Amino acid sequence: MPGPVPRAWHPRSVTIRRMLPSDASGAQSILKESPEASMWSMESLEESASRWIAWVAERGGQVVGFLVGRPAADEFEILNLAVGTEFRRKGIASRLIQTAIDTARSARVANIFLEVRASNEAGIALYRSLDFKPCGQRKNYYRDPIEDAVLLIFNNFETVS
Image (cartoon, rainbow, N blue to C red; front, side):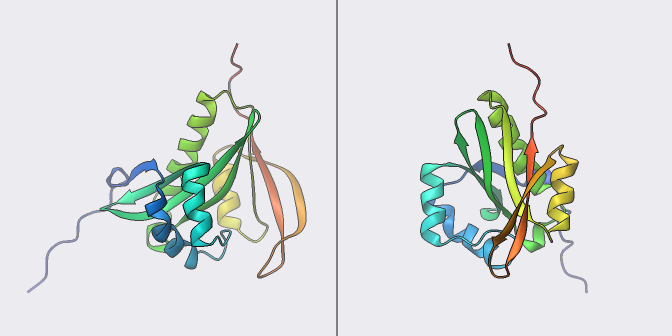
């Protein structure tokens, strides 16, 4: 006899909300399965939730993704983004990035910057699909393994008078 029918996945079953220090352990778990993301300590994640602008994607009380960024003058930098492997390719990263873009737009930010591992083709394709453009490279920026970073910029804001 078959078991219960699994609930179908729906993107709206995920909530995007501000990251709390208590979300750090969930974010840390995601980082452990995300070698393409920047590896941060639990303390760094807790501090990020208090000090910078950070969001989590939550489904059923579980943190399934997060994004941390920081403002710098009239710019915004995305510092870290990761989604749990089970929840990738379901639009969660796009929703987190769109939340950052909307927040930056409201704050009248001129540009959003980020860097991504040169080998992270899926990440680069995602950012490009959201109108981020390559704007530079940092040689040997990443460790474990040593790798270049591709710099990307989003400046697709309408002029605000």
